[in-house]
Length: 474
Image (cartoon, rainbow, N blue to C red):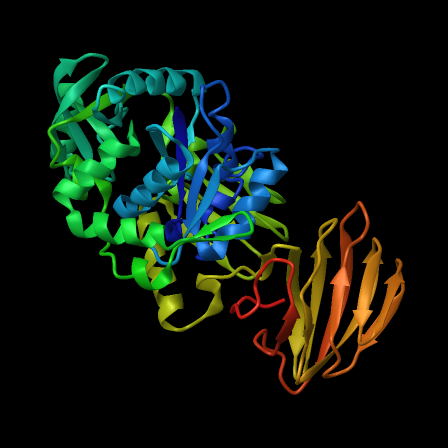
């Protein structure tokens, strides 16, 4: 049985300001209309595979579940990592989940959620070749046939042909330009893709052999896991004791059974704005333009507008990205330095490193559109069937105006409906809740007023999504 395992735990800081810690690149529609997570799931169609197991950050759980639901795909399991510990532990948790669900062994197809693959047919052929050798006990990885002397990727040198794959002769760290050119010319090297296929038991056996401490922690963490709605919640205390390690270092570089399957399918890990630009369609001037953009004498650039007109004049090989709360302008040759900006934002404790102005919740989203002394204005969008927590505030009152849709309001002991253009007032200390009983999205303008307007001024009384006691607000 082929069980896809989708690793969706990264933060994608090099694609800031679109990608942020709590809304990372795999959850964004960067190439095409689907998000990268959705595209990863959809390219499995046609393979003889189960529903996917997704390993993700606990903070992303509702976004992951909603994105799968919106493309009519269900997860076999959504495993929640309480802390990021790299790929070796994440895959071990997925392997335990697969074995817990199956009486026999499973073939795990491990895929990062943030890759672009243009040729799905070629990808599926490579998967079938890797599955053939994995059934016999090999641990297969996919080596990307290089198209340039890239210095941003690790490399894999192939050895002797073994069935439908090559023995791995050597893993090589990211090379300098000279060595990368030699690797390209030799024809014996592939880019290290970070995608794998092996039997669940074989991976755990090799992990036990070469990294027994990681194997032990993951085994104990999964044994004490609990179910929470559709999620498998890993024990925090047990798992945070695990050291961080990649599967390459923990297993693949040490095992005698590692093989590489060549893959030539228009692959990109979209690891920077430059690589995203290369993966997108471009116009006659070599530009990728997204949103409300006007260019004059602009060439070879990626220009993105989220909320307003962006105009450029005389730019060459630049990236310009505008969001509701930040603007990035950087030469393509310097895009790797975007992470330095994110580090500064984090050091200065600014919210922009982790949150967008629009914040997504399991019931929908809210956007802080204005604020000042003792007031804040938000736009709430509640999806059909969405229900906010039953809650109260100690320091603020709230005024709600329904812009479109129908709201079912709980205010104290009252429950009533509000239609378009109707409003209500929630005094300080009164319990309240918004529900959307309709079939279209509910839009509400909320005006908060009071001495303290922070999102942590909340007493959550009841919550459909199991967030009582959580730090997540609303």
